[in-house]
Length: 287
Image: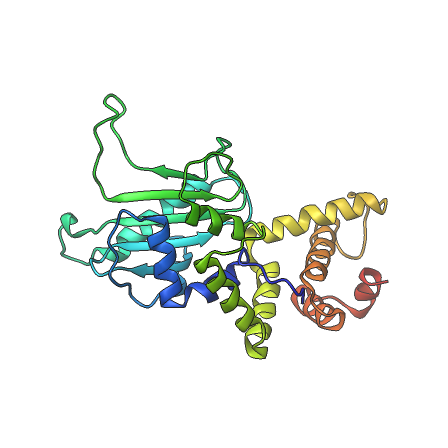
């Protein structure tokens, strides 16, 4: 495992935000205009199960405050297409969880979907983009449906957020931040986590699992495999014992797992088991 464990990793971020105090501090840092006296114990990696009618969803951090306001916070490391649609879907699933059968629509509480991005999702140089629903004809008229989407951008260049929030975003961006009480608390918490053997094992198991099962990571692995194939002079249409498309994904996944610091023997076992490869195929991949 790499010595530097970044809060950008969603498992690390979820582990840190499972600390009630640190989670509440972050929400208050992002939304200083709200008075948050307390929050529920944060639910990390909260899953709303997929059904035959609905796509499942997994939230990185999900919690409520003393007034029932919902806060969903996700670390979005990859600049993939469909982020606005993901917010829309998240908000819909939050509402469906919030409103029980027989309740009136007015019972819906406010909700905030907050994406933390180590990239600029809209290319305007802002550190934060807040989205509400407004009337197209009269911009001063707000719908007032209680839903807010916030994109935090660690690459912002504008002077548009508080120093404390800027320090947090700089820390997420792996910049050196000093003399900031909240960032120091985050550093200490992660440092203590990293010394826990059980947590480190869970961290690596999660990273490996995500390499195999996360849609975005699979695509990243496929693209990495295509790049490797081109570098090694492999023709995509060439007939091999493993289909070219599958070979690309496997090679890319191996490359990503190596970057993540997975020990070679453990990597081989995971790859062979996941892709059901023969010993001969493994020799070809790891020669």
